[in-house]
Amino acid sequence: LGAGAEVGRSCCVVRFRGKVVMFDCGIHPAHSGMSTLPYFDHINPAEVDLLLITHFHLDHSGSVPYFMNRTEFKGKVFMTHPTRPICRLLWHDYARVSKIAAEDQIFQASDIDQIMDRIELIGFHEERQFRGIKFSCFRAGHVLGAAMFMINIGGIRVLYTGDYSREKDRHLPMAEIPQVKVHVLIVESTYGVQTHEPREQRERRLTNSVHQIVRAGGKCLLPVFALGRAQELLLIFEDYWARNSDLHDIPIYYNSPMAAKCLRIFETYTGMCSESVQEQANRCSNPWALKYIQNMPERHQFLNQDADHGACVVLAAPGMLQSGASRELFEAWAPDKRNGVIVTGYSVNGTLAHELKNEPENVTLSDGRKVNVRATIKFITFSAHSDYGQTSEFIRRLKANVVVLMHGEESEMVRMRGKLREEYPDLNVCAPQNCQTVALRVPPDCSADVVGKLAEEVSNAKRGRTSEISGLLVEDISGARTLLDPEELTTYTTLSACKLQQCQRFTFAHSLAALGRSLRETYDEVAVSDGSLLVCDCVRVSLEQQILSITWDTSPVADLVADSVAIAAIDLARLPV
Image (cartoon, rainbow, N blue to C red; front, side):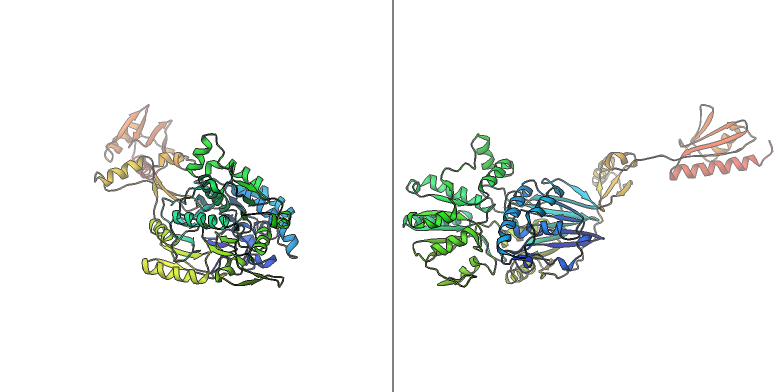
């Protein structure tokens, strides 16, 4: 419903065995109002069982308040612990801006307040189940709390990556690779067949570029997303400024209306950050107390006093220069050749940041004004999206049968699909458009987990000690199968075991001893116990006042033995005493 041959409004629906799962529910940053939404009119929201949100960026989460409050959706919504509070901040900020900028706003602050309690939390590697759908999530890198979601329906596993990165960050661990076979992989294709420049070289290019601009007396603007990748850049600049004393008198401003609240969230979830950040926190040093970074003054006041400001660096949202502080600073600084604009994030087609890739001499704004572009413009990506090499290795290690590409411009997706098919000839690779349904065939999963006593038998069988394994096969509502010893049913499943005892009674004029002699002609195991006969250790026969009772616990073997005992007793009863 979104992010098909485009970047923006990520939304993917998976249907299997009557279950419906929606991954992500974003908005398109290049549009406004209702046109930002995914194509919800192509589905019945009431049929959606589960909505799983990978991370807080608005192109993945921005439509959630609309979908939960203004459609017939009645299912459950899950996201990770850091994602929910950050989403709340970003949604309120978007509602505030939308109220000013768009008449057909998609949600209001009241919509957000109504849905927060309905959003449930899930931790990494925690397995949940709802309506026969098993699901869990794994670290995705990218931003704080970002997750890849895996669903399991009927034994078929689907992994949806959202935005993910296999590159090590200063403040986040890289995406992990689930240690389980995946049948269908839905993966981003943001950078297509491109290969990222090594991290150390990019950092060096970024810091050197900024250094040159500010030492020449210029102002440097870095458009950033309000949350997520901005924190990575702040750590880079904090480290660089600390190592270069000639920059200590040049201020770095971070413009975010949510800066203070965001800082508290990052402090709260430091345990989900990189090892270096955690180690610094363990030394009782706040990794987010930055010495060389300060909040930017109120932007209108800052712009009015622009002439009084010397060289400086400003990180300002939004990251694609659509509106807000970064757009206003661009308009003010772009005409001066001493200044510089460095775009560090991904820019979507239709935004001002994307237009700057063509190195125009001037740009025309939405209100018709033209702005001359004489400032230095550079693109140095720190957007934490996987490149081709990382994605190819990811696919190889997951051993996926089917790969579905999304979250990429059409040209990049097509090139990536072609290269993957060339590298993996047996791989089924799809690159669907928005609203295109793809029917996938995956090999049936006939596997079962062997547990308990039977696991030891399997181990012995592998060493050639036994040739057959016999046990009870249990399949749960999600299709997961377990092979076990029947006696361990309650240990390894939620099922409760019960025994059915049967008893046959009829008149028998002969003695129990006579019946015992008759049975020993057929069975070797006929014992006398407590005044009754025990046949094959499973059927008990007793005689009281010429009433013969045959009692046993139901099982395939015991049923056969009991029938044989009954026939023998009936035949004997026909004979005269």
